[in-house]
Amino acid sequence: MKRFKKIMICVACVLVVLLIAGLWTTSVSIYNDNFDQRFESYEPLKLYVEDFDGLNRTKYTFASDKGQILTGYLYTADEEPQGLIVLAHGFGGGGHNSYMDVANFFAQNGYAVFAYDATGNDESEGDGVGGLPQGVIDLDAALTFVEKEFPDLSIGLFGHSWGGYSVCNVLRYDHDIKAVISCSGFNRSSDLFESEGKKQAGAAIYLLLPFVKIHEFVKYGKTAVSTAMDGFKDSDANVLILHSADDNVVPIEYGYDIYYEKYKEDPRFSFIRLENKGHNYVYNDQEYVNELNDNFDKWLKTIDYDYLIPENREQFEKDRADYMTCILDREKWCNNLDMDLFETFLQFYNDNMK
Image (cartoon, rainbow, N blue to C red; front, side, top):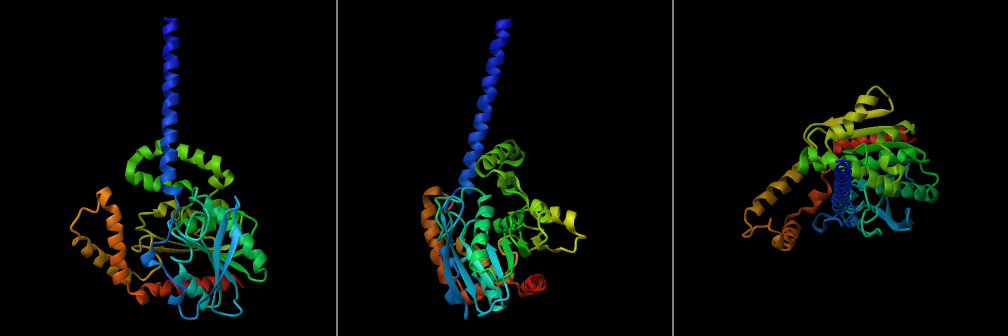
């Protein structure tokens, strides 16, 4: 009987080890499939410097943590800018091609803007992003670079989504940041895996989440476990937080709600809660975005093949790109910022970057 019990205990231990190994492998595989890929901006919707009258830019390169070379551009429209805004982009595309309208607005209103592609994006080196903490590391490298290159300019930060997470977390580092605007950001790196995973796997995602956190910690150390809240505590920068309640990519409870609960009475913090602006276009005028989406939905109904079948995806992506290129009104696309919001952003920088 004792021998039988020992055998059963050994079998149970082996099964536990196999279960843990399986969960670990599955977690890392899902994480890498989503976050350790190379990303290029969607060609039909790219923005170009020629789209904006009076916008000038200069190319720079600088190294990040593993020696990978990142590409950035300085955007200006004024010979003597009153400050420098460093722009951290969202996940799935670079900092220039998707956010040049933002750079143009601040450049036309007296600021220099430094926008860069994070590791594994567009013009920067890297076979893949690696993971979400890489955004903080790359932003730290960008700030170190601009501080040396433009030592006389006060620095502000602007970030959206992944960039919103990065601009808050980087406040833990030794940089003199005057003002931060975070749009649709999240508090910690694992939040995006959790929020997206709940859509696909429900509560089962919580079996995988501990292994994702371990994987990130092994790869990135303290950067993986730091939070935006840590950044706020370690900094005296003024912070503006923007989020929409209907955001289904980064739900508002993963960022804004946490910050508001702690800092709603703190004069360093300003909060803008929107109700129906979603995630990708949270600071845009929705009229032309809605027009594009409506036209695209109508176009989908005209396709004479099942675009959801994997073997049809390549043809579908080509057809979609051709369609978007054909119908895009570049003047509207390049000028669809929510100007009321951006006037608020501008005033925030003007008040805090003197």
